Every structure is written in C-alpha cells, then in structure tokens.
Image (cartoon, rainbow, N blue to C red):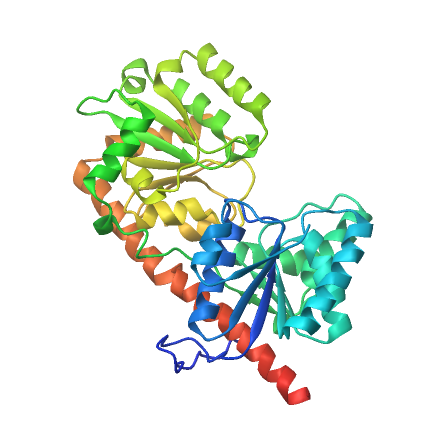
Length: 406
C-alpha cells in the first residue's frame, strides 16, 4: 500500500490540508444523487476549496447539485452515466478539452463508465489519474472483467475499506505502490447528537406516524429500497420473534425506491402476509439523517451482499446508536462486535432476529454505552476530516511527481 505523505498546514486557514493553491482538480461521477460515492465527492470538493484549489465535478447532476455549489464546487454538466461506447469516446474528447481550457491538474474518477472517458483524457493530456474503488464489481465474463479493470488502471487506486482493497488485489493484482486504503468519512459535526434539537427528532417520529408506548423500540433500516439491502430479510426476522416481542417493535424502512416500485409492492405484500402491516412504515429519503438516527433506538444494516464500506452503519454509530449489521464486507471494520453493535450471519433471518432480541433485552445503560463507544470508534477511524486529509495527500503526492517530471 502506498504511503501518503503527511499533509502540511495551508496558508489559508485550513490547518492540516496541503497547499493546493492555484490547482484545479476534476472529479468525475455519473450523477449527484444520494449515495456514499456522491457524498464523498462533496466532502473532497469542500476540502479542495479549503486548500485553495478549484473543485470541478463532471456529472449529469442530481439533487445534490446545490450542496456542491454551497461548498464552492462547480458542476460541469456532462452525460457521464452513459455506458454507450460512442458516448464514452465523446466524453473523453470533452474532458480532454476541459483539461486544456480549465487548466485541470488531476482527474479523479469514482465509477466505471466515466472512468474510461477520464482515463483516455488523462492519457491524452498527461495529467495524473486517480480512481476510487467504491465496491466489489462482479465479473462473470472476460468482457466484464475488462470493463471493471479501468478502476485499477490509475496512478493511484483508492479503496474505501480494507475489504475493498483485498478485492482489488485479488481481482486486478494492483501493486502496493499504487493502492491506498482511505475509508469513507463521517462528518462528526453534522452527525453529532449534541447538535440535534428535540424538535427535529420529534418531527421525524411524527412523519413516521409511529404509535409508540413506553418500552417500545424503533428499528430503522436506512437505504434505498432494493432487494440486496435486506428489507425483506428484516421482515422475516421480525416475524420470527415471539408475538409479545413483535408488539414492542416498530420497523421503519427509510429510503427511495428509485424506480423499483415493483419491489416496494412485493415488500408491502410480504408485510401483510407475515401480519406485520401495523409494525412497518415505508418512508422516503430524508435530508435530516442525524435526526432520523436519533428518532430510532437500533439501526439495521442487513445487506445480503457485502457492502464495501457501509456508510449508514458508521453514521449511526456517530449518532450513538447501536447497529446490527450482516457479518461481511466493510461491516467487519465499522462495527466492533459487542462494543458498538453486533453482527449476524448474512442472509439468516433467524440470526438477525436473535441479534434484535439481544440488543432489545440489554439494559438501557448498556445500549447507551454501546452507542457512545460507537461514536468514539468512528471518530478515531472514519471521520470526514481523515478522508479529506488522506485524499488531498494523494493529490499532493501525484502533483509533486508531475511537477518534477515537467
């Protein structure tokens, strides 16, 4: 794994960040919708502006555009979500012109399709190229493996967890000199229980229309509504509990279907079949996730496929909420068994039900201690500040090398 040089203090009031004054960095991503990769784009843009650099983002845009603008970043609207080979070649030409007209010093790609365009543009113009490997891309054919390989062809390949780094080594044989692990970060100020008013928490519970009584527990499963996120498994786990246990639980699915209405219909039918209609709420994505975490007692992350990192688990821990996560992927790094939450056998409704029973049966003081331990663990290992420092350190290293060659 390549060593990232320690960041030097800047001259513009952003201690710890390298001085990138006068530099222009382009990040490339398909969309600016809600998601871990998109959030990381914004966090790096924020750090770039603090370090004196110009922060550009090539994307077709989305609901996070205004967030990027508020942080001082600039959107370059391009159809970066397309996988059409003709569009990819056209985008490569557009990015090459952009490098020349805007004086771009480095390109950072975060998804496969736009990464091909970015790679070709970087090679044409001679600027450093960085990728972030955000997940374990499946490759059942030689052609798909070739398509995925673009993420391993950069001057520096960033993995968002040690689990992801292991996958990159195995799948692509990336040498350690080009590979660096930088976990996703949590904004410890935004995700701070002390900064969330009781009114914000009450607003979330009101929106969820929960009829809670003393001794009840709210289970929150945040994430887009898609099968592998484990909503169906959570329903099966709830149904596996005893009737008196179920009567104390409220399960909230918090996320958007993003076009998967058929899946929502199937989930609704499943809840009805299992007799859980009164125990389950479907709620759309909320921008006030800190309050949403505090409106719940226990957070679920039951993904049936390994998550490369699992941002919601880390955010929930930062908000002092114990987390129940499937025991695979990045969750093994974000959740400390028995200290910040608990992990269960992936895909097992029985195991998930047992984990719920375990946390619900704990004394309130023990759950609170677990939550506090989670916040401290995230502060030490997964802070936004850490991600920003390390990412800008990679940029500074490559820009230093590029300057020496020039």
